[in-house]
Length: 140
Image 1: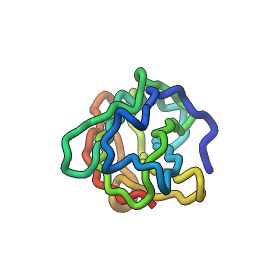
Image 2: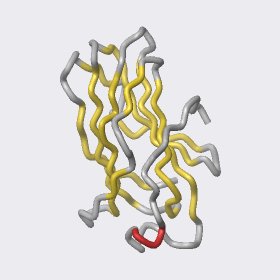
Image 3: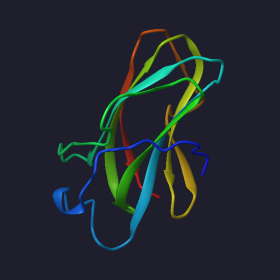
Image 4: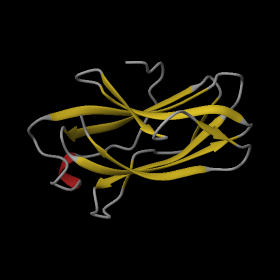
């Protein structure tokens, strides 16, 4: 796994989350990462929300905003059912212009990494212009 730091995240109790996603079988530990060109540019990850696809039952993954300038922010998403389809809503705020940024999801149990945004290449970010998007993902 490429994560160097794992930040505190909200305690996600399995019994409080939608049963369609969080079953007691095939639970896997997942991590969400923001990666960008490491040129001293700072990014704030202000929100990561997940929901069963189409359910509109959002759960906040972060306890608070995270700002960093070393090219990576990784947060634990908790235990999720492998094979589930989820909607993930994120908000990234660049403090400087950033030439390349991408998001990935890592299954810690299998070490499988999947790029989730942008669909191809990398996303250039403009200073003080948030990058927010909703992506639908099948958990590998």
